[in-house]
Length: 494
Image 1 (tube, rainbow, N blue to C red):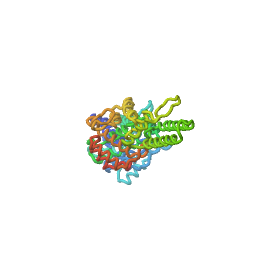
Image 2: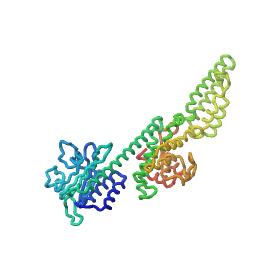
Image 3: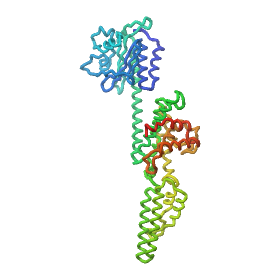
Image 4: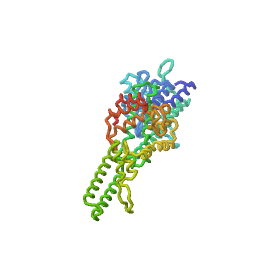
C-alpha cells in the first residue's frame, strides 16, 4: 500500500467522479479511479437493489477484462442476510465496514470460494483484497448504495502484488469512497427528480388525451417519431454535428415533444373534437326545420295554403336539409356549394314569439361556407390559442439548464421557416433543428392519423409529398424532410 498520495492525483479522482452524466459511465469512472488510486490490478463494483448486491462493473487489468451489467455480466447477485455473512461484500454492506484481506488463500474470516473458483477458471491469482462500502447519508441515516471490491494492490515500480496495508492510517481511500458514494447518491436523487417530472408530464399528457375520444395517441406518436428519427440521424452524422443527439439531448427533445400540445387542456372539446362544420348546431337546425314543417302543415289545415303548395314547400325543405347535411360532412367545400348555401339564407320560420327569423342564422351560414376542414375562423383562432397556453403554462416551470430548451422547442411547433406559421411568425433564424423536427412529426402524424372524426387517414406517400412540397416552399427544412423520408421510422411507431 502506498503510504502517501499525490494531491493532484486525488483532485483528479474527485473531479472525475463529477464529470459523468450517464449512470453506467459514472459507475465505471468510480471503479476505475478507485483502482488507480490504490494501484489495484482488478476490481468489481456492486449496486444494492432489492436487498441484493448486483454486479455492475468488473475490471481486470492483467486479464484485459472489462464487463458491465449492460453487456456480459451474468453473475448471480449476493443476498444480504445477517444470518449468513460469509461473503465479504455482504458483510461490508450490512455492517458499513471496510474489510482488508492480506491473502484470500490464508484468511479464514470469510468464504472466498468465489475468487478461488475464478482463479481456477482464468488462471488468475487473487491475493490481497480491499472491500469498501459505498455509504451515503439521507435524512441523517446511512444509506448503503453498493460495494467496491479491489483486488491485488500492485507496486507501480516492481509490478509485484503486495498488501493494502492499514487503510485507516491515512483516511484518503475511505474519504474517496465516501465522495464516490455521495456523488452516486446525488446522481440517483437527480434521476428520481427527473423521473418524477417525467411522470408528471406523462400524467398531464394522459389527462389531455383522456378528454377526447379522438386524438388520444397524438402526443405519444409524435414523441415516438421524434425519438426514432433523431436516433436515425445519429446513425447518419458524427458527434458534434447539429443533427447528432446525445442521450441528454434526446431526453430534452422527448420532453418538448410530450409537452408540445399541453395547452390543449383548456381547448373546448366542442372545437377540438368537431367532426363536421356545424357541430352541435345541426340538431338545432333539425328542430327549426321540423318547426317550419309543422307551421306549413298548420297553414294547410287552416286553408292558408293549398295542399300542392304545402307539398312543394316540404319538398324544398327536404332538399335544403339534404344539401345542408351533405355540405356539413364535406371536407372541401366548392364555390358552387358556397353559392347554394348563400341562397338558403332566404328560408324563414316563425319563432315562438311570432317573429319571422331565418332558418339558418349567420353563424350557420358561416360554418357551412368553411372551405376546408370543420372550423370557422373564430374556432380556428381558439384552437390555435393552445400554443400560447402552452407557452404560459411552461413559463411557470423552472426548466433551468437540464431542460433549458424544452419551452422554446415545445411552443414553436407551429412556426415555419418562412415566417408564415403562428403564433409569432418566426423565421428560420429563430428556429432550431429541434423545432423543425417536432413540426415535421406533428404534421406527419396529423396527416396520417386514422382516429380523427373530421378526416380520413392519408396514405404515407401522400403525406410525405405534402412535407416535401412544404419544404420546397420554404416552410420546413428540406434536408430534415428528406432524411425523414429515408428513415421510414414511421413503420416502427405508427
